[in-house]
Image (cartoon, rainbow, N blue to C red):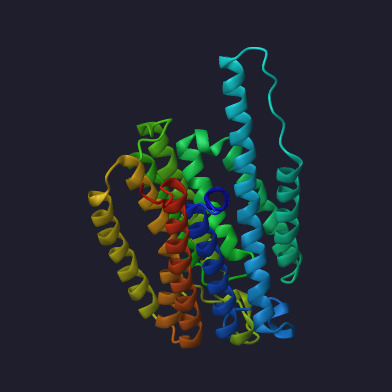
Length: 340
């Protein structure tokens, strides 16, 4: 039984599980938002494919990408550990990635692309671009903090856009990107990770965030006057807006309250953490678990109650799954035994 717990712990790490569930929630938000709002142009799949299948395809795409990144991360960590062991013991051959690891990487990428196929060619292309960003993050971003933080935010944003690359209302995507970057920065600092976050790296991360934010908001501004709900119009007289005129501000209000609550909760949890490593783990865990709340807030504020309820159910399921995984991890580290 102890061996089983240890294998489960290795595969289903708490931060990974929370991140995967958060990615699914982000993708589901876009599916539900597009299907519920007539102002979103969507893609042909939204008129020909049942909503349940769209949600399943979005989950497959995001989970596939997340498993792809986790498997690549494990292979690179194993190679680095082997190289370090070789330096300590000269003459020891470096280990090669196992066939099982290679199969997992290939299968995960195939699942991600297969899920994106339901949404069309642009979604498949975006999936491959996100996979490329995941590779870049694992090969270089983890060791260059400023670059890694920005890449992580872009990966989460890319997960959201795969179900609808033509999304017009992009502020939820911007919020998730910003949240992921900020949580990554806080975790890196309080976890005292190496390499340390220098002033130069922090400035680069902030400038990159400003540049990508401007690009995303400009895209939303350009698309704000497009869509089938507006009917035929003269392109020269289109009125574009930074904030889509058909979206209620209540969504932003609820999402802002959720962000403020995250700051309060995280501050409390970090203060109570017994070590910097625990504070790091809590930041990553709560940072991921909080993302479904943003989707729920946007949908609730816009009056899309069924979608908000579905995201809320997914958020509760994520919390339950993470809690169960934590218990399994605790049992693996401190197995229950009989006293003699």
